[in-house]
Length: 85
Image (cartoon, rainbow, N blue to C red; front, side, top):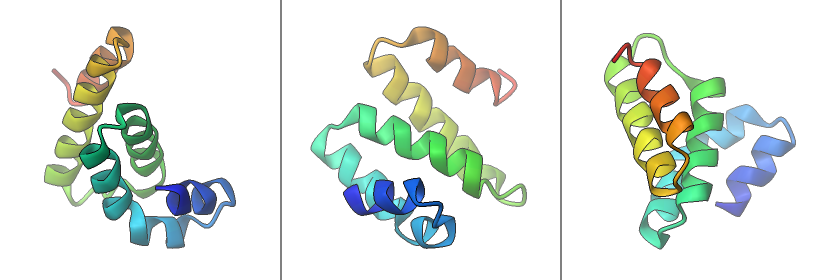
């Protein structure tokens, strides 16, 4: 996860994209909902593929769940609104 944040903060978005899935997995497995939400928000803003709607929906639903777990209900609802729900 730290490598992802370092690359993302440095503007190395192509390199960050390569490890985004691993960073999301690490955050989820360790229970770091805040880190997971940060990675997802960054990934969705930098790497969203308009041709891969399934992945976008999964990422937004995961972001909803992470935000809800953190008690940030307005941000959770915002994630769902991006799905058109």
